[in-house]
Image (cartoon, rainbow, N blue to C red; front, side):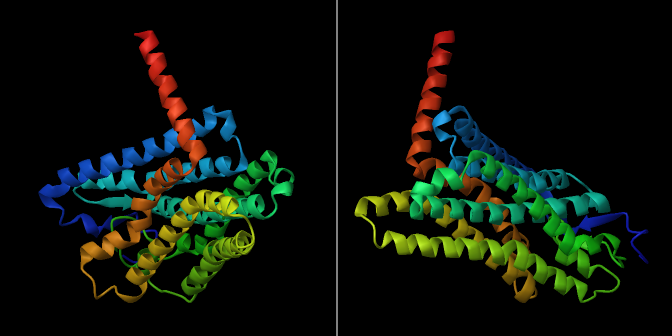
Length: 315
């Protein structure tokens, strides 16, 4: 294939050896995807219907759940459709669209967690200024800025891929990854390396830095406060810390897979490792926050008890 105008589709080679297991894989992926959507939607609904949860912390959590659904929808429908495809082809525009959605979602995830860390910092370290700093209008504006910033970050870093000329169309993965797409180009320039660095700095390093600084300040304040306040801080911060830690693990696995051990690991492991975050993070978020935050647990109980009573009344 001579250039990008002749490349109308990419072939996802990871599905070549699925065989009869495709039916089992299809059911597992479908159930997992639906579970992610239901779990996150339930948490969003509970926060929406309970006026006591209309606080900045829970509004930011809603945004995080929306992003979990968005990230999952960027991946799982393609996986499901490819299970029963004979050619395993994905058109170039759809491949670029998936790549855009996945990387935008990754940036939104990190920036949202950074915003939540800042919210916890203000709540714990400056409680008397919390209602002034974290006004509802400002929180919604912050959420909008997070999405716009994440999308522009991707466009600024990787828009050059759209004009690349390709000399191949076989992607050895289960989804469209920018690194593998770049390897198919007829000439790989230093622009690819620069784009990776710029995206990493803007969308990964800066949010992680804000999270780290926020928690260092929280830790400094907690060392001087009462045992009761320490316990309260631990309760509200634990789900967030676990989410950030899991995201760090996913980023490390992704980098190990594609940067260092490509030729030293089995194909199955190489394919699954980059999807670690997309497999576990969307389900971790609603369960960690739903089970660990007392106010959300109480809202769950009130919500489902009320629904059960309404159903019994109707019967």
